Amino acid sequence: MLDITLGHNCLEDTIMKKPNRAALLASLLFCCLFAHGSETNYQTEIIVEGLDNPWSVAFVSEREWLVAERSGSLRLITDGVLNPEPVAGVPEVLFAGQGGLAEVLLHPKFLENKLIYLSFAGTDSEQKKLNRLVVVRGQLEGNSLVSVETIFGSEPLRKTAAHYGARIRFMADGTLLITSGDGFNYREQAQTLDNHFGKMIRINDDGSIPNDNPFLSTPGALPEIWSYGHRNPQGLVIASDGTVFENEHGPMGGDELNIVEPGKNYGWPAITYGVDYSGAIISPFTEQAGMEQPIKYWVPSIAPSGMLLYRGDMFPEWQGDLFISALVPGDVRRLHMDGQSVISEDILWSEFGRIRHIGEAPDGSLILATDGSDGKLIRVTATGKLSEG
Image 1 (cartoon, rainbow, N blue to C red):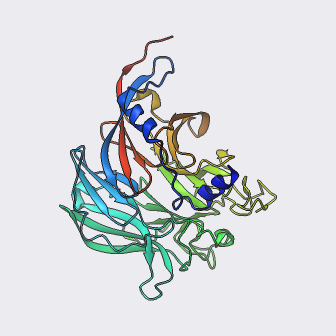
Image 2 (spheres, rainbow, N blue to C red):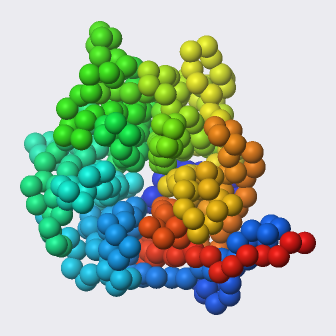
Image 3 (cartoon, one colour):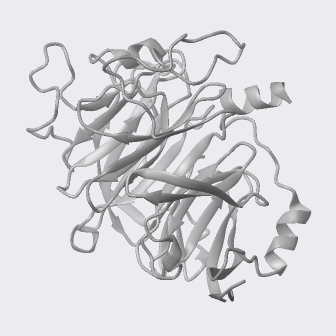
């Protein structure tokens, strides 16, 4: 059992746990009741199959969705039907290890400018054995991406194809946050400000540097850095009040949920609640002065992936709660929140195996993306209210 846990955490995307197909099919034949007092009944159904390592979903409208496949394709879904032809114009990505096409995100003014943003692992044009985290933007025209331009490329180049982070979210002021992982072999660099390993990056929507970033006047610091001391940030949510929630993989144990603020140091690898995959101590410290504490951590690891702050009307009792998809052994967790504090944690769905992404559709239903080469989108919809008692 220990060896399996090590494998899943060390190579979160390369060792796939196959879901129990019998349990999966059985769960789709019956209404799954969330049996807590007068809360809402729900049902689950597979709405799209045949996806190759789906990593994220963006909702263009009620009818049209975009899905990023880690293997390198961007796919358009219309009225629940997957377009057999990938979106044209997507740059070539490095599909190796944990690398590939990651996030697809709409610009806040997408209806006006048709801009979408993609994050992915990209091979260097001159040094083919090296790679980096890349963020591009382009305009969506039908089933094509045009006028594509790179707005961020991580430095320095890396040899590893692991720990990219690669989550992107827009803040209320129109700036873009990018999570950049530690590259697995470069963890010590998460504590220095002259590189992008283990950092959260903040740029304008065109890639320029905001004039209020925290390290603009720090000698030797990269001006786009917003926070540091991260390991492999896989979930990113920005609340309506501006609070930035982020989850990240620990090593063996020590997965974290953080509230991230500009200029702060989140400790990796100087402090951690986990140990190395060999069992060796990474750090004897779980806290140090000047380093932030998570608001929640997991030991053993759950390998958190996507994260959602629920705002919809379909499940009113879930409004304001965080949902975290997880890869080990594979489930979705609801964190009942009181502002910035976690009150309780429930596992809602564990029958589908590894879950890479959780999203909220325009109608307030939840969309789960299963991990792997036979990826599916599963929709969770309300069916009524449970009676008291």
